[in-house]
Image 1 (cartoon, rainbow, N blue to C red):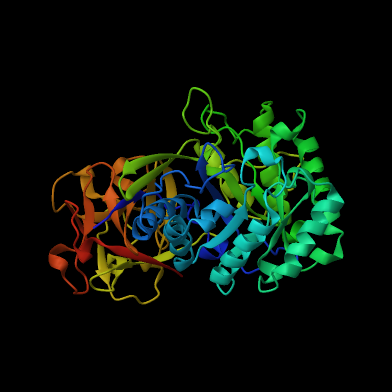
Image 2: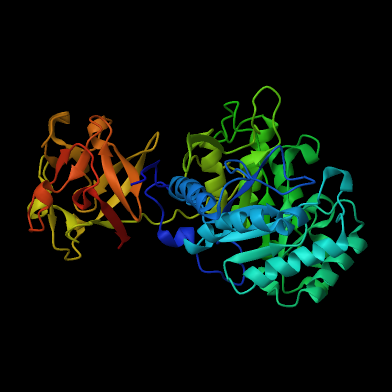
Length: 493
């Protein structure tokens, strides 16, 4: 059974509602928490697009399995719920590859992710213009025929239409809407003018009143600025349409150790990413970071130094590791999460999200992790018990770094702990005053829709002995295995 090493995101994993908040009149895009999955070398190609980690020889099933491996990591480490994928006419016209590539789309939508399908011109020589209008329309007709009824799929007619004047691009986009009436306008993203970096003309064109808008903003588009100047400039380019804009591309170096948590940094990239995140947060905008994987290859590195993740694993068991935690935290901050440092003094301080507490359920018994006898004392033992909605059966998750979590009792404020920091089989789980010990740090290891809790100090898993279903059975650590008595789920309370 495939197991993925993961770390569930959001400090205390801010409420599940943070992951998929309900849209509102002034915050129509905050539900997009996304990443761009791209071709290594970029998406401008005269052939089918094969994003990093996939091979053109992969079957649909193989693509689906690889995609699910990567989506597991994205979802559980950062709370990603959206992926932006490239298409071009060659990708869709090559029916063998298109049938396989669709595994990445279908795997995403089946788990509730949103997918943004964006057209890249069929080769860099096209200069920011659609390479072949007839082929482009035929491609979109095929794509919309397949996914037009899928409410999780969104359509972006063109990425960065910089080869057109403002009026030309608006006419091209309006003609696309007229030609593809089965594409629901509320699931269409019209890019801004230039490199999708200016929304004002699109925003003011009534032909696009019902669509979403795609916005790009990079530091290298412009000269160096102060943090405040970046914020002001971004807000200006959004015009009056931030509420229906998605920042579908933004990114900064993740490979050179920049500290994006420093509000006083003089580094231009740090000021830039912090400013983008703050504007997104201020306007409750969603976004898709560029790139998760793929993108331009940075000389000497072999990967895009903006890429959020380092790709590992083999076969269909692919893994991801964050390149820069402070950068990942800044992206999450832009999505609305409570994470990282305080904002600069000149910025309004957001209202912290309430802590989220969870019932932690044993898969085999359906019973909840429980502090025996509702004790608030150190060394009180932790067992499984029929859930009664009590505070001693509710827990929050505190990020301990490096993919590990402290699990804290709502009732006592104490941490789940392996007694005496023992590495022995059968060592009991207790609660104890929270400290820095690795016997209070647990890794969440995905196993389908469940997870194991693996103690950092011992590498062993929290286990219900003998797979008992009885109330009051004390939890212990044992070597990890595939048993349902080592598998847990969480339900927010």
